[in-house]
Figure 1 (cartoon, rainbow, N blue to C red):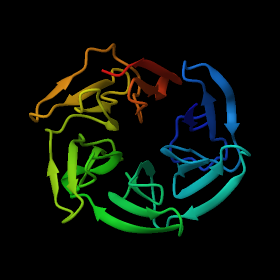
Figure 2 (cartoon, one colour; figure 1 turned 90 degrees about the horizontal axis):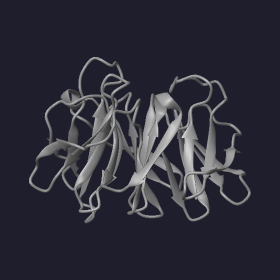
Figure 3 (tube, rainbow, N blue to C red; figure 1 turned 180 degrees about the vertical axis):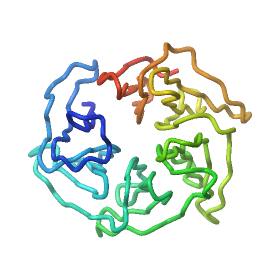
Figure 4 (tube, rainbow, N blue to C red; figure 1 turned 90 degrees about the vertical axis):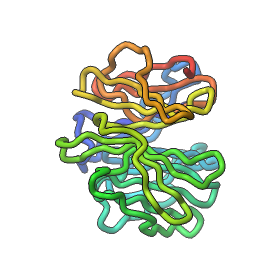
Length: 245
């Protein structure tokens, strides 16, 4: 199954209005249940699946649900959080969580339900949005975004051993989702002006190029099963399903 987070009636990622929900789709993109989970959610964004548990980021909280019963398993309030956005699993016990509003990447102990500040991005890199762990688990890639909407984001790498940071691209746009392409390149999305969003590719030689896709309104946090790429077109309230480039 494919799970899609929904902010609710308004395109407001910060509204604590209790109208957020999770939709369940089949692998073909057909809606199985539009409001699969709708209890106690405001504006859910990044999610991760650990066994039968769905971990959901909801503004300043981490909420977990049982996928079989749909019941809430736990809630972790993240002190000082502003805009929790994406989650990247290190393993079934630990994850990285981005807060675009504060610039912090947190480390979350799923079993102990404890969260700590792992690293704060350099100010010129803006806030971390999408997160992607390298295959050797030594580097964390993040597509960055300026929550104030003034500066352009970049593709940034964080060395997980010494926490050093490196910009891998020039300032590009309002960056969001990040996944691996079929050949191991990095694909990352940009809202651009909100109407003409694009998908960028960062290859093994360090070159950035645009994918040949039609402009889309608000390409958000993408996901892939290794064969198919799902791109939420947030402004259009649609999900684009294509073969993974």
